[in-house]
Image (cartoon, rainbow, N blue to C red; front, side, top):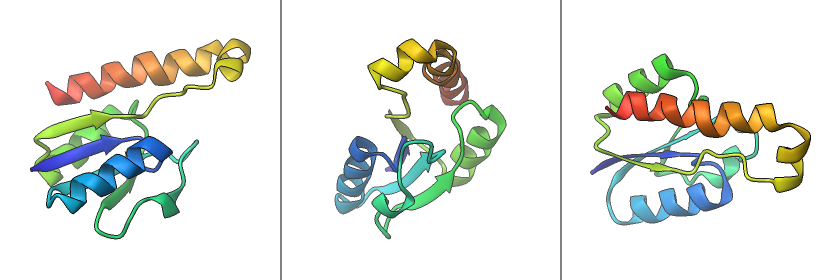
Amino acid sequence: MNILVTGGAGYVGSVCAEELARQRNRVVAYDNLSAGHRRAVVERVQFVRGDIADTEKLKRVCKKAHIEAVMHFAASALVEESVRNPHLFYCNNVIGTISLLEVMT
C-alpha cells in the first residue's frame, strides 16, 4: 500500500513511517521540519519537505506517489506555545488539516 505520513519527521510520525515501511508498504514522510528532524526519517521511507497547508504541492505528491492511505501527525501540540500564539496553531491544525482533507477527497 502507498501511505502518506504527515508529520513524518516528528517523533510519532517517524516511528509510524518506519514501522509501515518495515511491513513492506511504500511510505512518503511529508513534513515541513518546523518541529521534526530530517534524520528521524529512515532510508527506506521517501521524505518530502512540505507544509500540509500547501494544497497544490500536497496534491502533486499524492498523485505522483499514488497515495492510498494517509496517517496524519502534522499538528502543533505544545500547550504553552498554543496559548502564546493561537493563530499559528489554528493555521496548522485547522487550516492545514482542511487542506489535507481536500487533497484526500
